[in-house]
Image 1 (cartoon, rainbow, N blue to C red):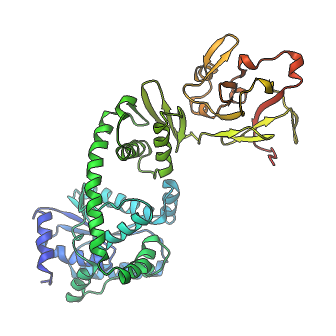
Image 2: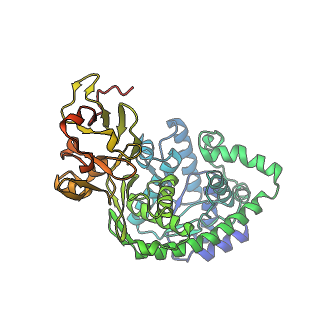
Length: 460
């Protein structure tokens, strides 16, 4: 029989029933080995399957030795060990797709494979060996990344982390008392990953200055958690009022009035998480929304991380489109102005490389009020044409410009009006505001503008 602290076994018994079957995330390190020993005390029968995920991030010799140690320990514990191999390069590929680090990609794939197995063998839970030390390291990382720390949850869905109330020191004691040799991942002592840098360098420095840092951080996490529960509650109520589809979310503008900023931030994160399916959302994107809203929606149409955000008369609409790029706005004060991903606004009649430009519009500078800007079209833009006032988005629709490209169509504006719509290079037409139309003689004094493909253009 194995020797285990009574506090640990007592706590484990509060989390599981005698009938539960569990998948143990087993790296073979001291933490997961101690967890497996403790679980065998309360689950003596065959209700445990240990699973080792080989991420193929280290050399084959090291991995072979580690797996061998893990197999011997599992045999000693009379517990089956399954080894799941990830393809070489799979973690790196996932990291690029999710636009996050290697650590996050490895963790994402690990939980994905564990959940797939749990469902396949019809087990109840996935169990991991996170400790109070992991909780504190995560809190430090969050703090120095500019976020309030959130606690690692003991139970989330089918995942249980039963050792969060116990330290690594407690687990080392279990392994030593029961005469086990655990696997050692040498990369844990190398500063190649962020968590390693925090664990190997920062924690000891903080401990030397603030001996009671653990208790202090626990208090911060507790208070942060309490505040977060309030924000989550109200932002969830707001999110429930939104109309949600797979690639679209809409909410009435009146629902967002007089809502505290913290709740709005949480709500917007929920919207983007819904549309982006767990891809990391940049804080700057949320701040862009908050600023526009605080300015009484000064920006009516913009693009945030492949999501078109449109402020209509009554609704705020988020539409995700994989083909969307970022919106733009620039001062037209030079010969070439980059717009969008692959277009250039040219001021003048000739290109250095290609000679005369065929499609140009002529604008008399005297008709402009203030500086001339080029920007993406916005939902409420209107242009006064000879035949009457037209909504720009209606013109783009009439020209049958693809919806995913319309936000890229440049318009010229001064401080009072839309001066021109330059849609000919997108399959539409170039239209000039009536107030800027001039006769043939004056056109000779005017400035010419056109939009061309950036490829092959020297914009210096």
